[in-house]
Length: 263
Image (cartoon, rainbow, N blue to C red; front, side, top):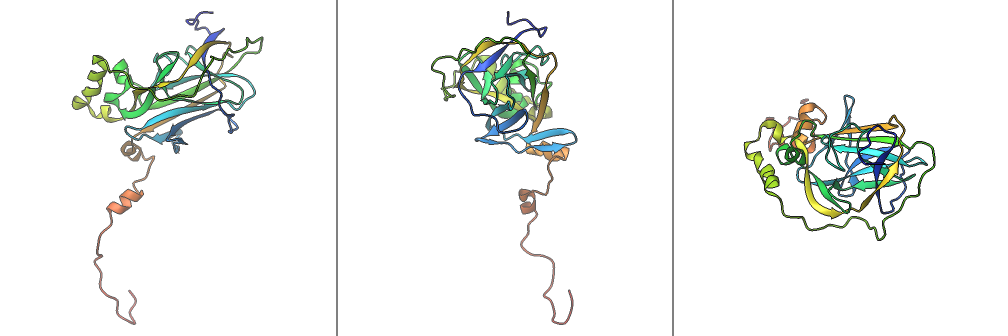
């Protein structure tokens, strides 16, 4: 079965080759993880938003609470995190999760052994800008597919697989450096939140066969923006601690009260 087969009868998925704890949630899960904790989610007008923290690295946590394998098409800024292609979820290369498994995807998968970390940045310095397609920046989506019933070949776990460990970042190409510098002439839209391609991290994966059901079992979409845009959209109120502090003053325009008189 070739990797290019896109009609859904059989697709190849990526299997993360290290053990992970069972999911605790009762449904399929997608969350953005910053510093080990899931980012706060803000439901608003039928969408779910999170706050992007400029320059901060994040991972994407996928959870499979079922008793069967599932395949997950995962995109950031409209680009598949496996190959940076823009396709339908049905045609996409997908991550394969074992029953009850939760995994954290640290970044763009650039080889069978290495990923490059996700981090929040401006559109002008994003990976999507370098690719040349910024139409869908600010989006994260996971689409879950159940496995068709039938005989399944056993998975072969890569020997010596380990959890991700930081690696030294490779020198940037001239094209990447140019993409980093275009912010000096950026339009307003270039300052909106997007995802960059950061330092290298070890993340071994392997290709496996997976026969998917024709229709997805679930789809989870998140939007992320910097705080300024979340306030402009009305997702967050201006009545936060910093806003209240900014309105503070030393004295009020008032006078000392007199006994027997109500103020």
